[in-house]
Amino acid sequence: MCGIVGAVAQRDINEILLKGLRRLEYRGYDSSGLAVVDKYGHLKLLRRVGKVSVLIDAAQQYDLTGNIGIAHTRWATHGKPTENNAHPHVSGHIVVVHNGMIENHEPLREKLREHGYTFVTQTDTEVIAHLVHWEQCQHSGAFFEVIQRVVNVLRGAYGIVIMDIRNPGVLAAARSGSSLVIGLGIGENFLASDQLALLPVTRRFIFLEEGDVSEITCCTVRVWNQAGNSVKREEIISQVKYDAIDKGLYRHYMQKEIFEQPQAIKNTIAGRVNHGEVILSELGFGADALLLQVQHVQIIACGSSYHSAMVARYWFEAMAEVSCDVEIASEFRYRKPTMRPGSLFITVSQSGETADTLSALRLSKAIGYHSSLTICNVESSSLVRESDMALMTRSGAEISVASTKSFTAQLTVLLMLVAHIGRLRGRCKRIEESIVHALQTLPSSIEQVLSLDQLIKTVAEEFLDKKHALFLGRGDLYPIAMEAALKLKEISYIHAEAYAAGEMKHGPLALIDAHMPVIVIAPNNQLLEKLKSNIEEVKVRGGLLYIFTEKDTVFTASKNMKIIRLTQVEQIVAPIFYAVSMQLLAYHVSLIKGTNVDHPRNLAKAVTVE
Ligand code: M6R
Image 1 (cartoon, helix red, strand yellow):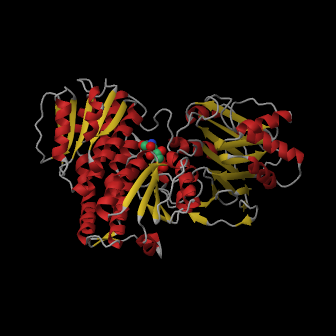
Image 2 (tube, rainbow, N blue to C red):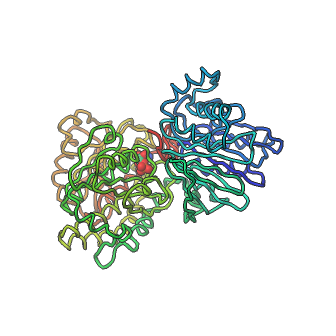
Image 3 (cartoon, helix red, strand yellow):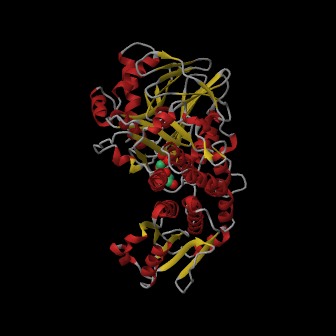
């Protein structure tokens, strides 16, 4: 998604802006630009389509020095990715960068046309630039008051940073539905959509809250809340690693993040499991009393996070004996959900900024859910701030668009939560002990999957000319088949579907022939014999089978059937374990096909627009 960097300083800021854009590249974008005001008060604007490196190369040819500026990476929503549509956008003396989407841009555009404004782009953002210009020309008042009037008429999601060429010592910002953070320096201050952009210049941050408007100069920071009152927001010292966006010796972020999983899981369980018990004290005082009243669990998420929630549904019902529904956020928010009494509302999200998930959380409050809990990887995110309780996944910054370590860390946290709620509900102590034991042995089991990297690569080579693939699983491995299909289609562009294996005979069997690879996730559990019958149905129809299973299961390889044997694993954590092998498969297929592993086409890391 789009990225924003802004700076006001006593030194030249153009390097800071360009470096910041580079650090936001991982979010996905298709064009970029920057605007600085030089010491003579002249605006210098540069925009380019394509990589930030194209913008940086172009920047070498101009003098872009200045003490104040804003920069942006754009992921096209309204209007094609062209130089003209790239941000910043200008209206007279006003310069704007924007993340998000303005839903009422059409009526606003009409109104502004009546006021004599001409539109030169197809973007919704140009509306903001003209509105600020119009408001400022019509009414006197401080810059922040102008911005407050403008945001009052905007509908949709936005994080905006605005510069006034006539007043080149101030940056104004506003956020609603799209994150913005202020970076605090000495004699300089910054704005960005993501703290990662500013780590080279500061570790001190203020995270703007929903509805906030702010004004920064090189020496002052002021914030007003939605009601227009001046407020003081807490300053936070970031613990995020500076080199979080460093690939190290790995070829891709995705590869690095796959291989980081044993450590990410160790970090995620550290201090939370002990002597056969799960301890989730960070849920806060009174949380256990709340959780004790829970009669139903509703989980909402998108994409990979939805798949981890799907696995958790099996776990909640089987191990904590509490009913559980799971729904995609974009569906939940637009139907008229009825709330079951005593329902705990859980959101799962890597970024904590996914627009649909955030809206679903807000809806849950409006319709009176018992309490809300988020499982999230970003402590400063909107979901964490707006939920009653939060459990952090500690997988570290995830840069690759394809979720890997955050997915397995989500499952790890969900499993601990199941154990915790199970205990509160008086479920068998042995279940909790087995969960703890399985989680403690999981990192080394995953190490063993990772050691099969080269073997999985040879399997991936057979997918070079494949156009389609089917993934099969049963029980809590069915959502892992869904995740495997998502991973493969997302980064290799091979059309992939997942089926609960028992469903094959209800239609998908018609697809089976010698060209259709069928990847089966076959753990050594109580459903294995059932699964073998489903495999037989594929085999007799000439399907091309790849069975991912464990060391001691009984399968005989035959002409069209390859067996990939992983080590044995505690069955409670089999979904997490098998997910890693599926990530490796997708990664190697993507390499072989030569697609862009970390930045797949048309996708962005955090989906902060609807
Ligand atoms: O940040 P979130 O977990 O809320 O993101 C949800 C999805 O956008 C995300 O999981 C997406 O499906 C991934 N690219 C999948 O690899």
